[in-house]
Image 1 (cartoon, one colour):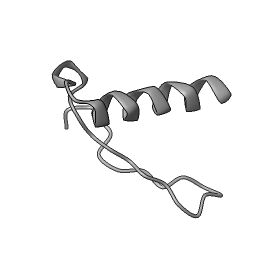
Image 2 (cartoon, rainbow, N blue to C red):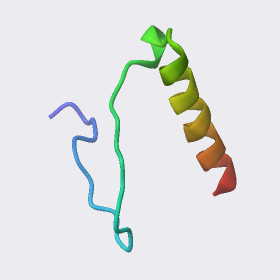
Image 3 (cartoon, rainbow, N blue to C red):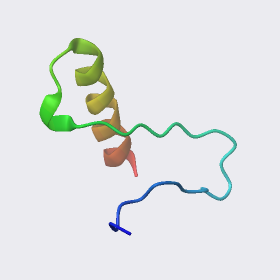
Image 4 (spheres, rainbow, N blue to C red):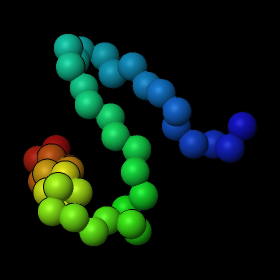
Length: 45
């Protein structure tokens, strides 16, 4: 057991997308937008 989250089951949600990636390797526009949307979602609550 390495302490990393491998799965989760959010309560009260019908649809969830989970993506595992290495942010230090971010280099294309798609990944930049994904990270931007993640930050925006965190800001909203």
